[in-house]
Each structure stands twice: as C-alpha cells, then as structure tokens.
Amino acid sequence: MRKRSAYIKNIAITLGILCLSFAIGLLLQTIFNVQATIPTVFVFAVFLVSLLTDGYVYGIIAAFIITIIVNYAFTVPYFKINFTIPENIFSALIMVSIALVTSTLTAKIKYQDTIRVESEKERMRANLLRAISHDLRTPLTTIYGSSSAILENYDSFSEEQKIQMIQGIKEDSEWLVHMVENLLSITKIDSGNVKIIKTPIALDELIDSVLQKFKKRYPYQKIDLDIPDNVVVIPMDPLLIEQVIINILENSVQHAKGMTRLSLRVFTMANLAIFEISDNGCGIDKERIDKLFSEYSVSDEHQADSKRSNAGIGLSVCATIIKAHGGEIYAGNVKNGGTVIRFSLHMEETDDE
Image (cartoon, rainbow, N blue to C red; front, side, top):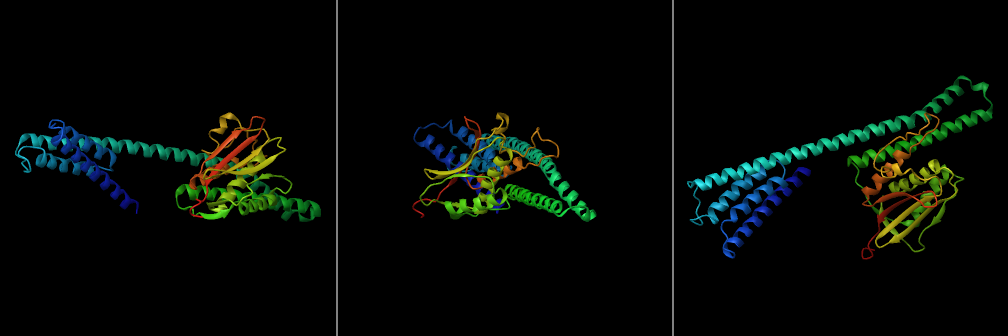
C-alpha cells in the first residue's frame, strides 16, 4: 500500500511539474515572445522533478520528455522532432546529467537522514532499557525475597508479618503490571502497529472512570475536580486517555515532594478540550522540562534500589498517546510552587453532533 502511494505521489509530482513548465514555456513564447529563457525553465523543471521524487527514474524520464517537448514545440522547425541537430543532442545530455546529479545528491541526503533517525531511535531504546532495568529490579527483588522468605520460613513469621509481606508482593505486582501496560503502549503506538480508533466519549464518564481507578491505587489522595457543567463529548480511545490522566496524577503523587493539593481541571476553548493536572509540590527542574516528554530517562538523583520510579516512561507514554490523538501536551512550573501539565484533545464538531 505504501509503495503504491509512493508511485502515485512521484508520478503526480512529475506530471504536475512537466505540465506547469510546458504552460510557462508557451506563455513566454506566445505572449512575451521570450524564446531564450524557455530552456532555463525546462532545466529547472528537471531539477525539481529529480529533487522531489524518489530515486533516479522519474528525473531521467522527465529529462527525456522535456527534451522531446523542447525539440517538438519550442525549436525551429516547430512541431517536428529532429535529433540530428547538435544543439538538441547536447540539450538532452545536459538534462539527463542534471537529473542524475540531483537525484544522487537527494538520495545521499535522504540516506543520511535515515541514519540520523535510526541513531536517535537506538539512543531512545538504550535510555528506555536503562530506565526499565532500574525500575523493574526493585519490585522483582522484593517479590522474590518476600516469597522465598515465606516459603522457607513460614512458621517463623507471625500472621501479621505474613499479611504485610503478601501485601507488599501484591502492591509490587500491581506496579509491575502498570509498568508493562505503559511499555506496551509506547512500543505499539511508536511502531505504528496500532491505529487509534476514536469513539465519542462523554467527559464526565471518562473522569468518573479515571477517579475510580485512581482511588483504588491511592485511596487517601484527594483530588480537587473542576469540569464543565454542560455535556462535553470528545472523540478518543478512552482506555488510552484514562492511562494518560492516571499516569500524570501518579507522577504528582510519587514525585511532587511537599504536595498538599492535587487538582484535575478540564475546560473548553474553541474546538479543544483542555485537561490540566496541577499540584503545589516541589516543581520540576528547568533542565528537565524541555525533555520531559521527549525521551525515556533515569534521573541522576535516583537512590539506587531503595526507590522505584516510572515517571520517565509514564510521561513518555502520555506524550505518545496524545500525539497519536492529534493533540498537544505541555508541562511547566507554577509561580507559587508546583507543577502543571496540560494536554488538549479535539472535540466533536457541532454540525456532526
């Protein structure tokens, strides 16, 4: 399918440039009576075809076609093809040479761009592996240690100790499941294997579902809620957008030191629904804000294995999902202290409703 689209695109570009150059040539010849400039127009046309199409074929074909056009319509005697004239032969050779040189340079530039993109992807993968190796090690070690202790020394622990250890295993397992969900979202959407299927979802239903799931993980964390009173319908993949909101809320709970207030606000502006999650915690370092959504990273301030953190992966998931929905996401610090993260989604058009 992609190859077919590429063929159609290249053919359309070639035909469009040829037709335009032919029209300009006729205009110069019939109206302005400027004959000497016409070959320059067609040379530029060959250059554009070679520059804007893939490979060498279209530029070379355009060079031959333009040579015939110039010979037939713009060279005396008109409306006759005559390649015995030396000027026509040299024109053809020049056209083909321009096509080959331009196509070669364009191919090299595209190849270098491909290498650069692949290098960037490899760097992102390395950072992701570094992040998950750090974040997965702590809960796995805890699960293994607690389960081994219970199996090997079951009678040595009191019932209360056993319950605490099993509860720790349960919490770490839930966290691992959540981490895996984040990783799957990144890899599937980034690879293009998953197409976002949007369905109209009422905002209040989405928020209710988010709050229910969040309360199961953080039952004692209060959220100040502010959403429109009127019915707001947004086309989205509800599970993915729920994951975005929960990831951002969890990021505040885990990393906003000194936080006493966590709020979720939604408002509309033109044809956009703006989601805003803010807290009054410690804020984000200025050096990290610009890269917060663009890469998977482990903070230099990580304390070895005493703490688990999936902020880098979680926020990268958020950016990936929002961009796949055609929206934008932003993070910044609040003047009075704290962090605010906003993302936008397009709402349904009034006429469609």
